[in-house]
Amino acid sequence: MSGHDPFCPSRRLGRGVALTLVFAGVVAAGAATGSLPGELGGARESAVGEGRTTATLSSRPEAVTRAAEEAMADGKSPLEAAERAVSRSGDRWAAVYSEGEYAEFAQSLDGRYTGVGLEARRERDGRIEITEVRSGSPAAAAGIRAGDRLSSVDGTNVEGRPVTDVVSLLRGDALDAPAGTTVRLGLERGTRAWTETLRRTRLSTDSVTVRRLADGVTVITIAAFTKGVGDSVRTAVRAAPGDEGIVLDLRGNSGGLVTEAVSTASVFLDGGLVATYDVDGDQRVLHAEPGGDTGRPLVTLVDGGTMSAAELLTGALKDRGRAVVVGSRTFGKGSVQMPSRLPDGSVAELTVGHYRTPSGRSVDGQGVTPDLEADEGALERAESVLDGLGDTA
Figure: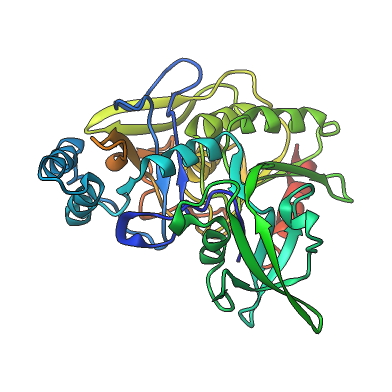
């Protein structure tokens, strides 16, 4: 399990800490357009927590807003009242965010985040190892290197903790810590142990990375669907030599902007259906733009961390026969949330519908089953599949 400091704000609901991504603007590209209602303009989805539980539709913006308004009239906290209303609703995916958290999410989806520039993973013995230090970041300026171990954050021992918790501590989510605030890290390198105080800053993410394997296969990894991802994937595909195969790696992708997932689907499809979704029973559709590359061999890699918008893309490519899906069953988050502004400026997100793949299969609570199961050696399996696809092309 690995993680980095973008995209990991705290979830105020239940005061838990979870990996959270906000999905904004469900608008179809091409022949049809769909968007969810809501004063904040556009649809949003959230991917939060673990497990495969189907969200209910029992919470509604009116009920939560009414609870917040009544609390404000009584001199109580509208945000806390909304949290209680959401908690009682049974809506697994609903959440309430402060105005600052919501603004931070919007910035994250633009590819910006507040952090120190570290990426880390938890080893089997529970230790937290730093796997990457972003160039030009506060961590890089302090001389922290990949391979160093992170033992504590602001005095809290992080050994054995989930990486998402460690990332949240680094970002100061529980404190709503902005850029400019400091964080004290306990570090180890060999037998040396020391502490380093870093100042959080605004950083930008690289959501798309591209590498070419020795056999000529191009691997395009999408960490999250932030703004511009679709264009980046299109550029990478056009730059790939000839008709050589592509591996689209969506493992660990918790989602992002649905518009960018549809834009990415358009890179590989020549128009047609990407997904359908309902909003309180009203059916909507998402279509790809025409003119995508439909001939190049394509394998999509997925795992249990592939969620929401990433599942929408995977389901479209699988159902349309465009890609062979390799890996393990995806997370299973196919519900749609609508944001509602509360009287104090905070935001409640409530489930209003679910989406389905082009063949009509529901993703929520089920995930997408790969064509070929693979865990260890999934990339090697993908290469083998591409070899076969190339032989039959």
